[in-house]
Amino acid sequence: MLTDLYWHERRNIIISINEKLKEKILESLFSVLPITCIVLLISMILVPMEIGTLALFLMGALLLTVGMGFFQLGAETTMTILGQGIGGWMIKRKNIYLIIIVSFLVGAIITVSEPDLQVLAAQVASIPNMVLIWTVALGVGIFLVIAVLRILFKVSLKKIITIFYIALFLLSFFSPDAFTAVAFDSGGVTTGPMTVPFIMAIGVGLSASRSDAESVSDSFGLIAFCSIGPILMVLLLGMIYHPSEATYNAVEIVPVITSQDVMFQFLQALPQYIHEVMISILPIIVVFILFQIIAKKYSKRQVIRMSIGFIYTIIGLILFQTGVNVGFAPVGNLLGSSLASTNYSWILIPIGMVIGYYIVKAEPAVQVLNNQVEEITGGSISANSMNLCLSIGVAFAVGLAMVRVLTGINIYYILIPGYIIALILSHFVENVFVGIAFDSGGVASGAMTTTFLLPMAMGACLAAGGDVVKDAFGIVAMVAMTPLIAIQIMGFIYTRKAKQLEALPVEEVSDDIILLEDEENENDI
Image (cartoon, one colour):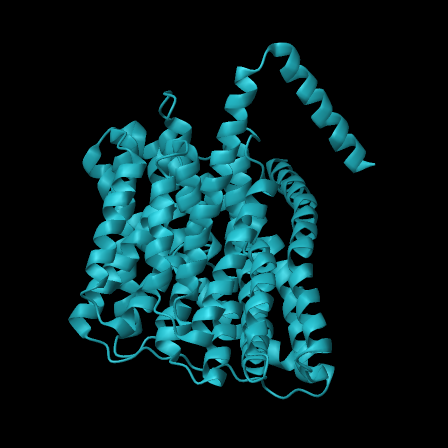
């Protein structure tokens, strides 16, 4: 009888999750479809591709769509809940030393699990992969502790971020020039699909213990700190190792003729990504098991639900990694090299901006952040508004990256003014927008940037005869920078409009709301 009840309950949970899975896959389809159509259009007009290459790309897009759907649902039912549970549990213990130790270990473990970091580590010469990975993990662990302590002791996010970014740029002048762009890129790749939902949820769990007015805004900002730490640590590592160069292995497109050849390429790559994802997810599963044993936080139903969520996360990441690496990365490299080889290589800039505008929508971590922002702010900052601002920011970032590829402009001429503007803006907008903006910077530079935009920049740089290390590396850093400005501008406009509405008489505010509703109804019609 009890066995039948257990299986009946489990079946109901699976049915409920599968209904949500359909919704997530549909959302993913609308995210991936624009970039797929853009690439197909370019292939018909500017860069003719072989049928086999297009088949690889389309198969990659299919896997990417399904993988995003699985991952987003898995992240909601596991990473977010586990992160909130750990954050709340740490606060209830009221032991500062325990909080520091747990925050450091969690930050380091989650970072080692980040697939994007492993991709970047493989491209950097003179430094062993694991040395670079653990250096970055150390940086995330230390700065997650700083971020948690900031929330607990209510330290101003604006002040502490300003101090750290000034220190970061000062330190960068003492690091080898050839390594600067790689160091800044490392700050972007650490906040990917594994890290973001977990660390954001820890912030929510910590701030939920407070009832003051700043608790909501303080739930943001952890990802921002987890982006600063790796940059500082990798700059220090560069000074110790004195790396002579950082290399990037150009992506080669394997010739395929039949549909069977296309399927074989994906099946051949599948074991590698299954292995990588399992290694990445194993530490988090261990954290979940240990936390449940120690805290006994979750009921049997929740454990079942979260276990299924882990399975969905694993499936999603495997499909996502296989799709983008086998189908997307080779096409990105081909587009970059082909467009840069033409007499109208300048067209890389507008095309890059269009691709950047749409590609950020396909980042799984971006959707997780946007949904959490909408939920935490009670819908006052919608996921659609976040998507629009991030798309505009990333479009400018990719445009600037293509300018660097074609002209060889030093990355400092872009990063230093960009961060100065972002830090100045932080003193004119509300705290909640500052935290969201700096979190968004880390989130926007994820898997799609490293596996499509980075190969595109590399291919273009090689074709244009530029220095790959100095001119192409850094695209992740710029994608991480521009959302800081875009989101804070959105916050500034939002705050001004809110103050204007507050200043109006009640009757006028009501009329304005009615007019807005009428306009929305007309648009729907």
